[in-house]
Image (cartoon, rainbow, N blue to C red; front, top):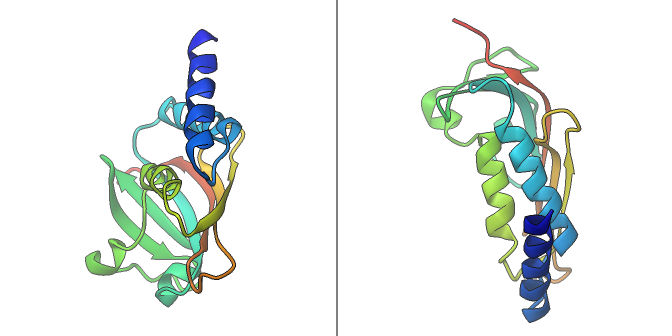
Length: 154
């Protein structure tokens, strides 16, 4: 409990120095969710993801991503069943990379807000909206994640 209070105080001090898209409470929730995800009972996993952004069409439709030893090893588009080749596979994040992008985006001055929702059971983000300031064009985007679980065994 003492560590959480210290962490919350540190976040409040950092936020007071400048505008931060994440509040101290949101930082605490992020840390809790990351710990919950790290404590999952399986190391390799699969999940479904899509993005809302001005990006490649493959990224804006639902895809099943398989992650083994921290690396994306397979991506299958759900609508067609097509498996993406390695180059296109590299466009898809791991859950850990999404957590990392939340942390790094918090320092971006073009963002007005970062809105994150988490899975209650495993802690992974189910929705991450990077909301840009009104005068920034094409600066935001949203990740949608669902159905995370153990990676299929070969």
